Length: 207
Image: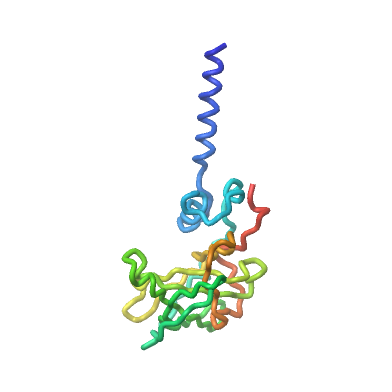
């Protein structure tokens, strides 16, 4: 009888381990990496109850038409300013430049920013911050807007850079109100539906 108990215990442990090692969901390497981070309790912004039920983030279908080349016009002598957030926190940013591009036949513009705190961090010094809202915001995507990271090292000598709207993410505030998140400036609203990248976080998507 004892050997059956031991065998059952071993099978139970193997079963648990196999569940923990389920493949990370996602169509692309970017989506898989984001899902892996959100599944990791040491990195995830999810609340404890949501983390327990976490299956994976929801994305629009990957669409190559939302990968565009933008022309960067740098902002000379831009002043440092306090960016509004969802709390009283006022992080310091500079306007880095304007990005002009064509998407779905429309000429569009976004302002891109540089965190002054990031410039002091070796790990993030090359990161630029691109927040935006669009005509899916508040419906299919998070109402406060979505973010995209752009690297200064990805800007060409001709001052062009590729924007991949499939690789967007939500501010942590979309998942947990304990976080303080920069608010998307009004001028960064795109009068078009960006049906690519991360979708709004819905509780019913968890199991």
